[in-house]
Length: 117
Image (cartoon, rainbow, N blue to C red; front, side, top):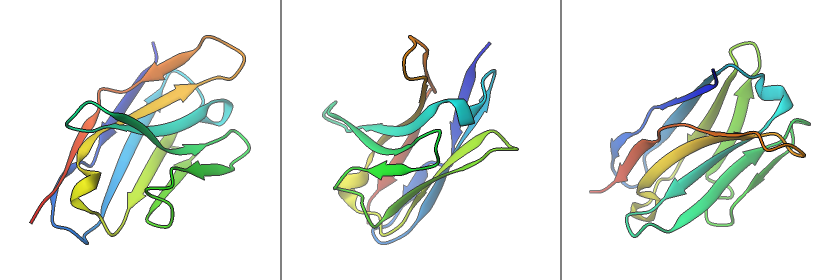
């Protein structure tokens, strides 16, 4: 059984930082494209950051330079370090795993991030 469990969300003030974690079981993250996506209060969705099996990463323009995606292979965990948070970053953040060339695509349950003064 594949599980992705996110944690680390919360309420912070603008300019502060958070680190989200996604603990994965049932698959090896090094074989999957791992991503963080977010769903805004108006239900818009955005893929925030992606890390590929090669270790290369990619970011949405809205977070480039502020967010960093990384993975700890022995812990089978993916992280999203979020700095200089803005109210516009308020959203539910989801971790996903997809294996290119297959129909395998898994999601976590999400973790809420609120940025407000």
